[in-house]
Picture 1 (tube, rainbow, N blue to C red):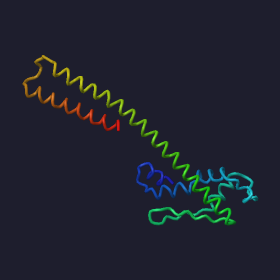
Picture 2 (tube, helix red, strand yellow; picture 1 turned 135 degrees about the vertical axis):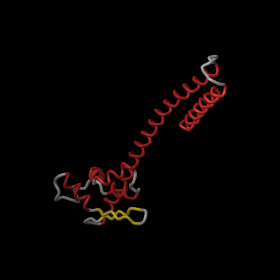
Picture 3 (tube, rainbow, N blue to C red; picture 1 turned 180 degrees about the vertical axis):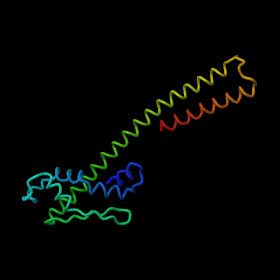
Length: 168
């Protein structure tokens, strides 16, 4: 329910619990029902919702240690094998797509952050260059000027290090 959603959003759910939720989801059952020709195994079922419910009803998810055990109970050994295989393939496809989405979002975030850091690095370098070239006497002392220059160098070095990390 909402507790599980909150835990997923905040990252407080274990991988085992997340996998259990995925295996037990209607979305995965719909993928299994869509991919497999199950009409011949469930001739009494006429609509898709009932078929998905029957598919969901055929599985039991049991956490064991750090893994999730998927138990399939069906009318025949053949159907048990078909459903087991269908669930595993649907789970693999689902997690692969989610991993691709996550990688894409991460790449976009890093590219955006890289552009921001590049601008900040150039600004820090420009401020440092301007202060170094400045003949103005708005500093009350040489010590104050050196403190400001050191701070600008530190900023520039920090941005350069961050930029370098983001490139990796």
